[in-house]
Image (cartoon, rainbow, N blue to C red; front, side):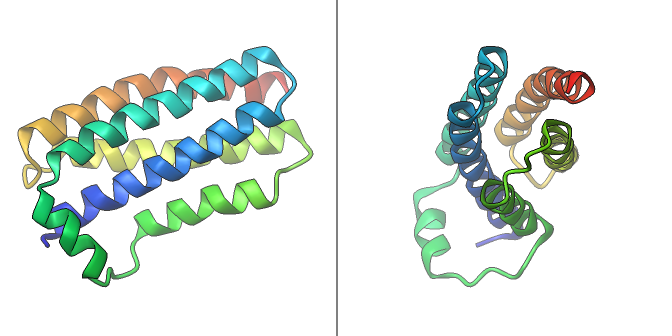
Length: 148
């Protein structure tokens, strides 16, 4: 499996972790506006994961199960979602700050995918579409942080 396929697989996994995180977060918060924002973040990640999954060839998926992956910064982002779920900060401002940091790192990562010509055109377009959606949602998340 190529490094490109590895990174796309990692991005799919991180998106799936983000889906689980934001779905659970939407249930935890009492504010309906926040719950809706978290649901929209989960939906954006779900759409991205589905679309990227369609771009990885079937043999690459099979190889993913058997190949050992080297630790990467992408893998670290996945752990951050899990850690945030386990240690849900009581302080709303701290919670939004950590979420905004995670999403900012992911947005930077997806921007790199957009610029990386080793990825297929379709993957780069999907990443660009996600970056556009994420920018809007992340602005809302930062607004929540400021208002907390």
